[in-house]
Structures are given as structure tokens and as C-alpha cells.
Image (cartoon, rainbow, N blue to C red):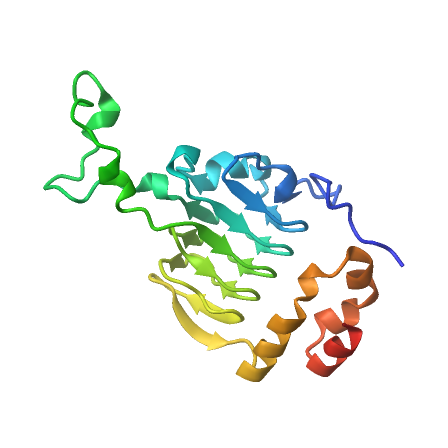
Length: 213
């Protein structure tokens, strides 16, 4: 039984250089990406770390964590807490970054007070083209984010969200099935086990998947 593509590959589909395994492309210290999660972009797939993850300043302490087996479409972007401006005073203008004396009196705490925490994306999540994920959001396992959505709040596992701001349209499966899927966590199986049970993973028979487990 084939073990599938090499999780260490940059281009797991050699004929299509637009597809990259992000774990092997992004090196920022505050970004963690699981195996087999890929990004598809015909023009700049290799630049995901700088073009699609915005304001990821490690010194602020926040992280972007993306699980395994996620599919991220062209133009999807993640905004980190570094994009925040101070909002405790009358002006939100970032005077300090321009220097020339404007940095005097600036307190980093005026920025960190507004941090929204880590941005967490679960496993087997599909994020559509040009979606925008805002800081501190948590997207559950198996969720789908529609193209051009702006995700400003948490997304439940196995839900479909769309719009600006993104709102839940429906659940992909019945709640009891979702509970069983979350308990199975097939994405944590070894590659060989995933390969042997692709029919059950691709299918919609929860009993069959549980039997495979």
C-alpha cells in the first residue's frame, strides 16, 4: 500500500508547481503548519509566508497554528495581531513607526492590550479563495470557509461559513456524526493507515470509518 506523497516535499504534485505543502515553505518562528496542508496559487505559492500571513511579528507572542490535511485556496490570507493599532487613546495613527521623535513616549502596552491571542485552524479545513482570517479566530476541524469570506469570530467544527462577516450557513453533518468524527481524529492516523482507509475517509458512512479505526 502506497504511503502517499512525501510530507517533506515542497511540490507534492510535480506537474503542478502551483501546489505546495506549506509546512515546507513557511519558516516563521510563530507559525506552525501540519503535514499535508497545502496552498494552491498559480503565481506565488512559494511566497505564502510573506504574502498571505500578514503582520506576523514574533515579538508580540501570538501564533498561527494550522492543522493537518487542510486545503487553502489562492489568495486566502491570515491577519496576525501585528496589524492592530492602539485604540486606548483618541487617535489610532501609529506615530511611533515613523520615528523622527514621534516614537518618544510610545508604550508597547497600548498595542499588546488589544491582542486577540493565537489564530488556530483545525485539521481537514477547506479555506476558499480570497478568504480573510482575522486575528485570534479559531476554526474547528472539518470546517469550510467560503471564498471571499471575512472570518472575524470562531467557526464550529464541520460547519460551513460564508459572507462578511462570515456566518454559519449550515453544519456539514448531523451533530451526533460530528461528535463521532471528532472522536476518531482520522487526520492523526499514520500515513500508512490513512492510505489503507481512503474509501472510508472519502465516504460518508461513519460506521465504516469507525470500523477502520
